[in-house]
Image (cartoon, rainbow, N blue to C red):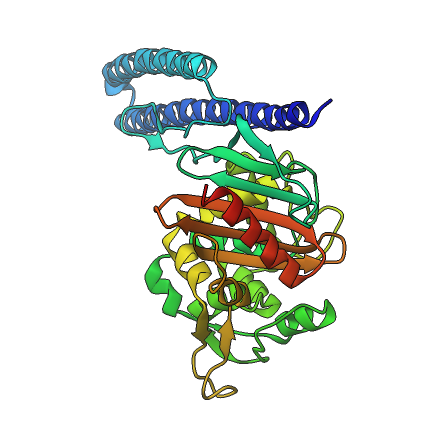
Length: 397
């Protein structure tokens, strides 16, 4: 199999998995709506029968028969309504599945909100995707990273790739998903809420040799500090603190992360066991998956603002009266490189099993937007220069 066939085979397999996921989500939603209809009708019916029974008991035998007839008539009418509504709901389910089969899913189209049961609507999450075309280039030795992907966001076309569908450890690129899941659970005004760091959280970073912001046990900081601390210095203490604030525990938050992967249509090739990016054989994704995650993240206002920051100073606390100044070194190091535009958001990562990694979002001088993800480079600077090479190759042509 040549390189072109290999790329098309991998991309087609991923696209088919996402298409199956979209159809299953639609079927599940249709079933949920059908159950909701039955419940909405059955509860009032039960109430009517219960009230009728109480009335019959209280008035005695003399008036029981007329009242019973009235209740029976109302029950019959409600039963007929139940049958009609159930038939309508079943028809809606069949229509939903027919529309799902007829759509050219291919993982390429945004899934639209489905409507059933009158005003009862539920939005199906957007499934992100990108596709190989005849113009997709196999990235060669000009990039040291063994895995790479470069996407034109406007067209959704993959401009270049190298082993983009290989399973690997995402390292601290994981924290992009961490802030995305957290940001979707709060309103902007909650960024000023406070959170008290605990010894368990600070010890987690210390024991696992994570990079950290430097928060201390008992330190009261803002949720905003947790967001910026998770991304800029890749703080394990901030990430676990953010997870605990959102879900009550690290473990519960990881469940939310995996639910989000399922919503994004990535759960066949991506799974998380922690919010930090520690290596675990069950903690994995592909660079393609990570590209879809960062694409979703930059559409969230809170995530985009945090991932775009070069520097940030945390809140003044008793332990740190002047706050802690933190930096996104990837953005600061790449901003003076000639890439034909500007890198706007980025997150790096490193574990021994997948080397130096990075995911970035950039824009060329003409305003076109791109996502670039690389993994398994030989060092942090080499990783930066891999991104420089890819932006120069594809964003300036």
